[in-house]
Amino acid sequence: MADPSSHVHGYPGRLFVFEGLDGSGKSTQARLLGKWLSSQGYRVFHTEWNSSELVSNIIRRGKKKGLLTPTTFSLLHATDFADRFERQILPPLRAGYLVVCDRYSYTAFVRDSARGCDSAWVRNIYDFAPSPDRTYYFRVPVAVTLRPQARIPAEDLLLRGRDGSRALRRHHRELPEVP
Image (tube, rainbow, N blue to C red):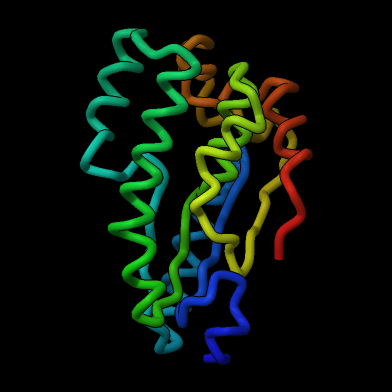
C-alpha cells in the first residue's frame, strides 16, 4: 500500500464507496469487488447502509408505523451512520483494510434533501465523515431501478428513497465530484 499520508483520509486502509439509486446494481458490484479483492490477498471489510445495531430496529419500526418525519428520519440515519463509521468503518481503515461501503454519507445527502431537509444542514451533520479514496456512482435509468420493486407501494418507496423521483435523480447529479 502507498504511504498513508497520501490517502484522502490519512488512514493506512482504503475506503471505497458505492452509491446510486436502489436497484442500480451498486450492492451487487460492491460485493463482487470485495470478493475479488479478497481473492487477490487483500484484507477486505464490507459494510452496508442501515446496518448499525444501535438504531436499525428503531428505523425499521418507525418506517413501518409511519412515525418518521424528514427531520427525525435524517437524524436517525445520521446516528446509524455515525455508529457504523466509528464501529465498522474506522477500525478496519486504521488497521490497513480495504473498506467497501455499500452507500456512505452521500446517500443521506440525496435522500434527506429529496425529502425536504435543508441540504447544508444535512451536509453539516455528516461533516465528520472523511472523503473516500474512490467513489463509484451507479447512474442508470429510473426504469431499471424500479423493476425489482414493482410490487412495493409508492409511499413505501418514497420512505426508502426508492421512488425514482426527479428530486432523487437531481440530488444524485448534484453530489460533489470526489476521487
